[in-house]
Image 1: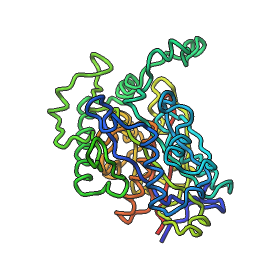
Image 2: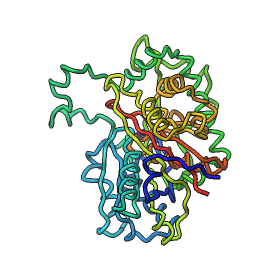
Image 3: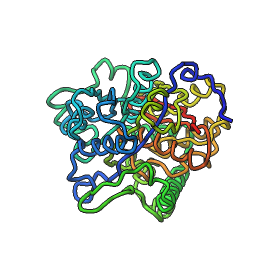
Image 4: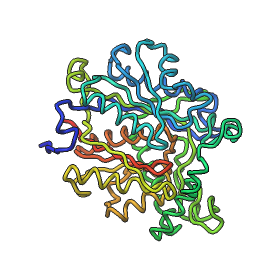
Length: 398
């Protein structure tokens, strides 16, 4: 029996369905060894478009809009990469696109805006996607961009806030919640263990579309390190503070990848013969302190549970983005989460975090795992640079 949940989307006449969800392999952002070192981000995103259409059987011209997340929208990712990748794939120019930046939550926000348009009856078929090539277009660089075109933070903003890096924010979270280095390393070890086990068992087979990269067909994730141990991580130096606790081992690695979700109204799903895999019950975004900045998943989760009359125990699975170990541990402690239901196939510390694309990966992962477990409710939440948080509540459809 499917529960009736009275969230905002549940109260509308327009049901918003997730019909397909795919992603590329995630590759290390490495100039010599990265899987995507010779691949343009247009091709990464075009691969996702092609696979969504292939799996669904939808004709390209029937897609009404493309909503795409990307955080570094300059260079190869400039001038609306959502549109450019569509044209790169040879698809009809009549299909429009928008590229958006909500930092790490960009692809999840792309799904939120797409769902909003479907829920209101504006569109029936929308692809929500994300892409980030962190090797070709590094985060917060090149430095000359600021030299040439100015800084994003004005003197008035600096008077209000002493801005810090996300790594320092992760350290501030560890300070506030009393999270030890050992706690963070343990979460990272478990992330790699779960991710390696999930890959070995083929649990990512449906969400990943294989790509020929550097002469090899890749269908995994380059950043997963089987056998990661407390001893291995214990030997790493801290990165953001000399006397800190956060290391590269308890941080998500820089990597490259793309993801996408095909969203449809119930009517469109029926008309096009699409799978109704899950429905979006509710979604929200929140703002938090821009200095500690990465605490957004806490109020985002609280808000979405409260307005749907749910408790943590009602949720079958959680995907909480592992930007840093301290982010997930603080969320766990505040909400009393059962960690056996959180990131069950590993998280971004193992799988990688191509920032503009990760939200689509989380949605693909949770829908696939709900199906495998014959479970019902899943919640995806992410922290976002600058002090924001996202949350999406999905319900599997039989």
